[in-house]
Length: 156
Image (cartoon, rainbow, N blue to C red; front, top):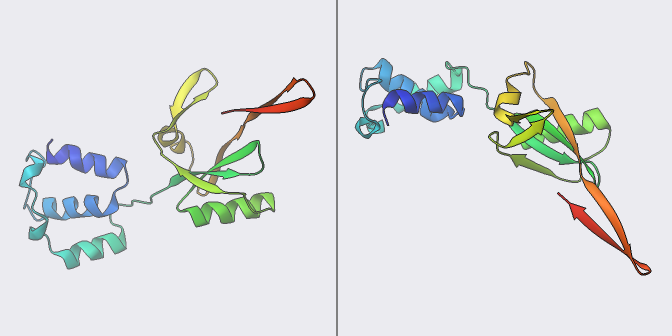
């Protein structure tokens, strides 16, 4: 893998520290985009300068994740947010109740939307403000009676 590919991936996957270190090493000409990543020596970086770059966020990286918040036994809301805490606060403000739980999903998780398959990463590009509701999911619960005792079969 070359530095250019790693740098691009660090931006795509919003790895702020790595992206800012590579940015700094490239700007200082300690590495070039065509170098193999084995040539990267992070000890050559001025760690104080990189810390300032990260604090100023010169690359404009604002990490946004996707969170599933459980409303009840069947209903879940997916929210794009900067953190689990932000997702819970947004949910509580929007739905006037506290979620039963909150779990982060991978942005690369793919789901069906209409006749297409889309990842949360691609879906996130459709939003300009965060936090934002990405959608909802309703789990089917089917009751099957056998004799006089009902059995509940959950389908995920």
